Image 1 (cartoon, rainbow, N blue to C red):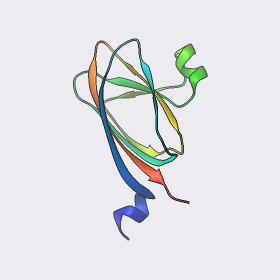
Image 2 (cartoon, one colour):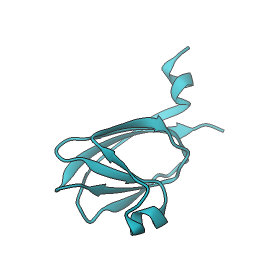
Image 3 (spheres, rainbow, N blue to C red):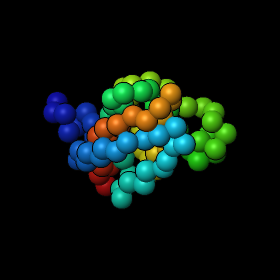
Image 4 (cartoon, rainbow, N blue to C red):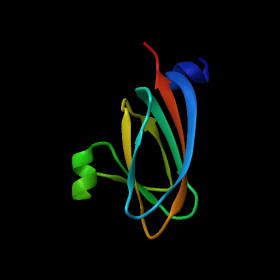
Length: 93
């Protein structure tokens, strides 16, 4: 089985600095799988705007990898700014 079949889409990289105020990233496609890496400080990932606003129901750490069928991703730095690298796999079909 190839990586493309496991990940389920075409890889699309994105890299940016995320601060403690947080931000939303709008993908121009629906994702099927995400790989996220934070360089300096840990980050929080939110999968809904409501969770981001309430600062609840998040994933926190330096590395995230897993399925995610989303078009938006909310991120927030923990303890300071961090350069975040995201490999989003574009959902096919």
